[in-house]
Image 1 (cartoon, helix red, strand yellow):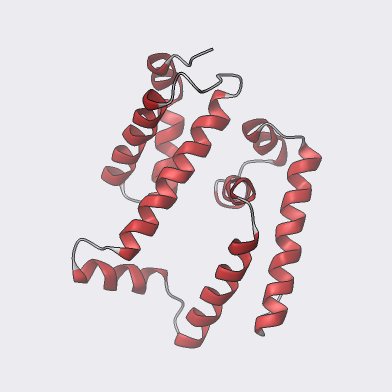
Image 2: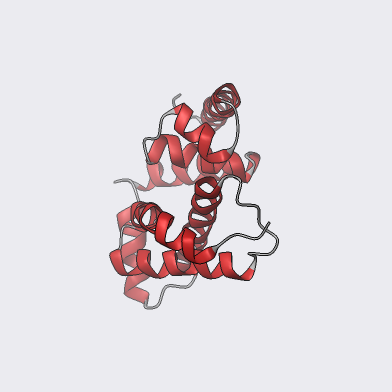
Length: 165
């Protein structure tokens, strides 16, 4: 059954906008990202199932925002933007910044996309395990296992790179 995009926009638009604001931390970019989420929903409405609409929309919003952040870092609109992004996201010293990049690169290279979304919902957005489970269509124990696996990978990657767990 195809999704009703207009109904989803009315009902879930504020939730999607909150997610975009939380991830992008820029009101205008968040509004653009929210619109992109619903454009994608329109493009694929015939192939989507409306069984878990909030989980679907949060997953799309997370992916849209993460793609925008990646693209922004790769191709800043202005050279000063690149510098600001690097300064804002960097720890205070070069060694910490390099270590963090190595750890995150190794860690997220191992994780499936769904685990990354679970981590963002629980650790960044502050959703409970039950709320995350409901959003992604998994059991609470499944979400807990994914987070535990992520924590184990963090410890392992930190240990192999000389970081602390």
